[in-house]
Image 1: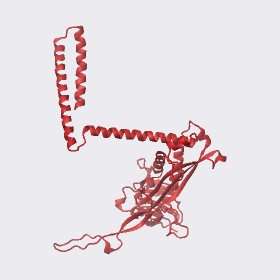
Image 2: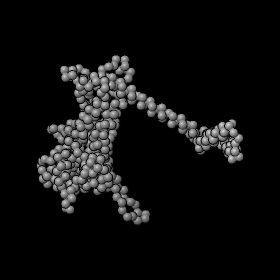
Image 3: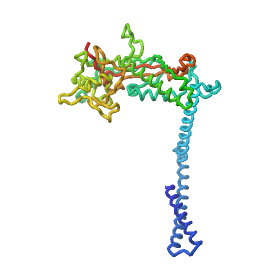
Image 4: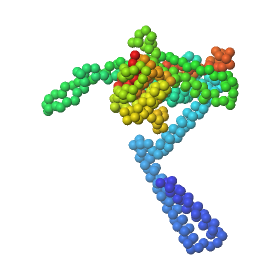
Length: 405
């Protein structure tokens, strides 16, 4: 309200100044004189109103302080503190980016490196803002990871899974009579999903010619390269996994969707039918359909483009509104080069809500530049270390199509 009154008062004063200038040059007309008098009275009333509003605000602030209620001044201070914190974070990000660029270009001294960048226990440089940019880009490149249920904790993580193991353990609902006790049945939590952590590293080589070119944005280049390598590796582990060669029950590394048991088996080793696609779709519970996606290889998508329903309509449609540009039975189709091709025994399609896949990161990305290792190639190496694990968390949320074998 005070802002509106202030603006009105300023407009009136401006008009009054104009009439005063006219009065210095000639005698005011009766209408002009009346207008000037009205301006004087209106300005006086507005000032009185502003004074009353200010007095009332002071009274309310005093009462609010008694009741420990945040005052308008407190809110302004909080907002100012948030803005200052935001500016400080932006300044820190800019400083870390410049320091990281200097670190890569080898145009830094030991004191500057110690001041601007933090070193981990393994000697790797860890610029938090750069690592966060890499992680964000990894999520952008790998929608399977982005859509999964993520845990950022250290050590071993055991996820309890609710499982109605037997009819006697089902939670029952039934008609009852008054004064007749109900029979209590409780489903059991079974801790069957354990996530640990497996160390992985991504190594990219950067040309010294690019590093020495001061006009080239070397920081964005390194972020893009690192994110692309990490995303491809993680996506492969989420889709295919790395089970032990000898004993599949004792996994060697990350398993991802390898542990998925909800499956539809195709009748052929080399072809997929429309009926099998429908069966795979319906293998996922309806309550998990809203966020479901299809995952397949480019060749599998090409094969599905030729499938038609009983009305002669193609099942797979180009869809500009879909996140990945095409849809199958109304759900987005994501294509990954990591997915196996159509062949005997291969898991060629996944369908469902990827929140049924649990992923855990227990070590932030550490970045380190290797200067001497690739000196004979006129290049530097940039290595990123991270630790993660992934397993299927809910078998009802995702299903797979396996070719006959």
